[in-house]
Length: 475
Ligand code: BG6
Figure 1: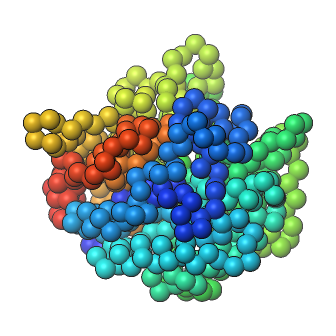
Figure 2 (figure 1 turned 180 degrees about the horizontal axis):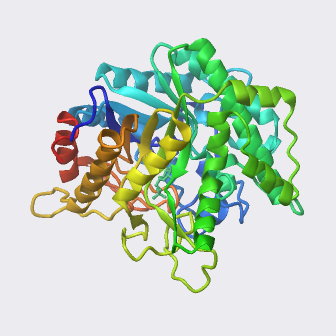
């Protein structure tokens, strides 16, 4: 099987996980700069622990990451030599508006992205830009409360306008928010939310969700005005939830959990809150004031494509107290006895990708884009030949790409592209560990940032290069 001509094969990263140089070029501090390596990391991401200052005794993976800020030329060249046709990266909001509410954009920050984008275009690599990938300037959190505050919508639109005007002739594909459905699980990482004593956390999260959705719709409107041919997408942390058994109660629970993921994407695709979400808010005593103006903004500015990350499927039961849980992923799941798992406990389910693609397309009828998929694994450099023999990653990718090809060629799902996650090794978002590697290009750094930073193509690099060259025929 083969993917259609023009299919966007490529790789994906996020600014906070690859750029480093966190204070260079007048960049402002963002929420991701406050996430240390170690146990506190998840506590802070979920908002259970508040941390608004950098503690010099800790290691912060985002501060130096893999130094793509200085090494972008080498990184893009390596991607180009692999045959990469699309590079998904995010722009760091703090590089463009260091405090978030600045009147003027930071020219130094823009110059960095000018150069990065030029480098991609030079090799005919299509840039796919994520406007916010788990990042918000600390200034907006401290002064305004992040996405809790309606004002943040305006600052975000100012930032978007700067990007759209600057890159209107260079960037066609845009994603407004990475994994927008993580807002309830990772409120600080996803939306810069810090809860005050006594605050109604649920109410706050829904409010922030509404602000992000309104901002996303308004950004889509702006993008279409400035760049009539561009495509703006939403982005879902996906993975079908299976019922643990055919007991109707388990099937119902799986549907409830699937809808928890779809709720926000439903708004971005259909332009209104789905009835099950409206009812849920009513039951939970949530009051969400949706003005006529907001309702109209949501309705008239829906997305052009649906993008998603897929790492694993999940399993749900109406009563999961006595069943074994899967570990590792930020989304809870029952252990699926039919599946293998990664070293970090993420369940591996290639057919689940085909199922997820079909479910999403049946529901949304929009072009799809797989913008994250991959295996986080420990790699070792073979002392004999200095290479990385990552056959496990090749197997993972082969099976997932096969499932994707079936969804497209057998089931007829329209798919714009496939950008594998962390094409160059980067620190993990949830763990901060460099040893959780996804890349086809190895980076010589350890969990604490020690090492040469040297890039070494792995066996999977040569394999993926062949896959791209044959449009997926040779797996
Ligand atoms: C997605 C994020 O949730 O999963 C990425 O968009 C992240 O930023 C990726 O890196 C893989 O997760 P992790 O925690 O293994 O890095």
